[in-house]
Image 1: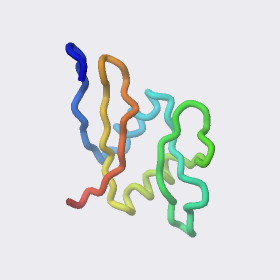
Image 2: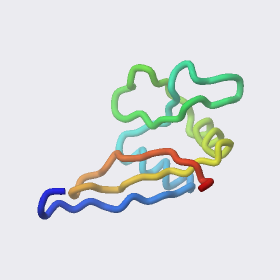
Image 3: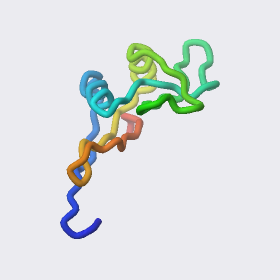
Image 4: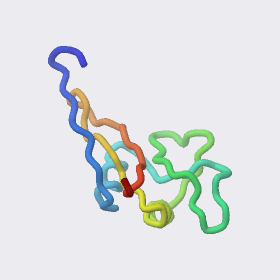
Amino acid sequence: MASGARGSEAQTTTDHETIRKWAEARNGRPASVKGTHKGDDGGILRIDFDEQEEGLEPITWDEFFKTFEDRELAFLYQDEIDGNKSRFFKLVSRKH
C-alpha cells in the first residue's frame, strides 16, 4: 500500500439488510451466473454492478437470500478503500 493510503478492514456478515444496503449503495443488484440454475438451486450467486454484466442474470433479493441461507454462506466485504466506497466482496462458507 502506498504511503498514506488507508483502507478499511474486511468484515463478515450474514445480515440480509446489511448486505442489501452495501450492494445498493454501490449500484449493485443480486444476480446469478447464467446456466448454473438447476431446479430450486439458485445457481452461482453474484452481485452485478452498474450495467448488467454479460453472463449474469438478475434475480430477486428473496432468491439471492434463499440460496445464501440454503448454502450457509457469509458475506465478506470491505466498506472503503483509500476513502472511496469499495466493491470488494466475497461469498464464503459460514463453516470453518
